[in-house]
Length: 309
Ligand code: NCD
Image (cartoon, rainbow, N blue to C red; front, side, top):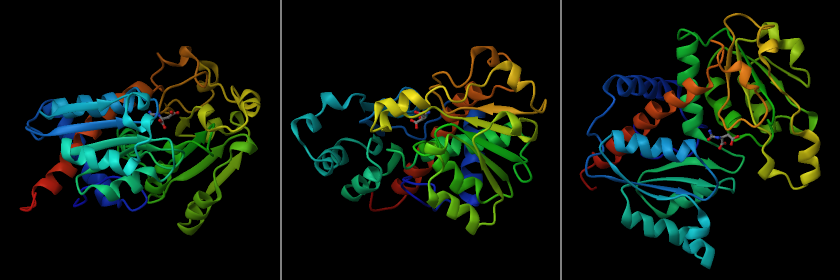
């Protein structure tokens, strides 16, 4: 893998994903390395985050790097009216790699124009969340004995605004998987992703009913209704709580079923699911740490290996 930035999954090949999965597994074995020794990682999060920011920071520290961080946009000069372009020009001088989260779709791609240094997208609006998609691919592989082809994946909840599902689809569409999309009609998958799947000849079904599909599903990927993206708060109130997975429902699925969730969960999965072997969402978090080590190591190696840097 040659790239020095990770902005979208749209152009990531299966070979690149396999490479990062292998790197992540090496990181799991090593635990600590010196790959980022002497490097400063800036995490600029202009939208709330727990896992993504701290997982990148933990990854940077385990690679021997150091971190500087914006966890709250209201403490930055953006509050005074500084443009995103200027903020990035500044961090270009302060850090060796920039991880950023933005509330506006496309903002990370825009920001990356103002620095040559490695930029990693930690989520831009409802558009993309590539590191989450990669850690989910790693989780799919591990939870299903490396066998993704031939399996049935169900994505449930807010498929309109959920950037994790959007990012995963570009990667999963490179496999021979079957997909089921379950959401209220108002939160259905945007047309562009349907087009993508049609183009790749991936069989998929859309429905509002989860229970009827349970016996067919291998991976059940639950998502949160993305409250912050709703223009009308009443619409959110009406749609929240539309799918709640309980232990009783999980038992209606295959014994080998795996339940995933990018987290945070609000009420999509009741806590009685947590102790079941089917519950993979906390293992997903652990996989995220190793995948982010792999991503940071790879983009930094690619960028700083060049003689001009
Ligand atoms: C997701 C996100 O930010 O898109 N969270 C995460 O990074 N694990 C999912 C969500 O917020 O619902």
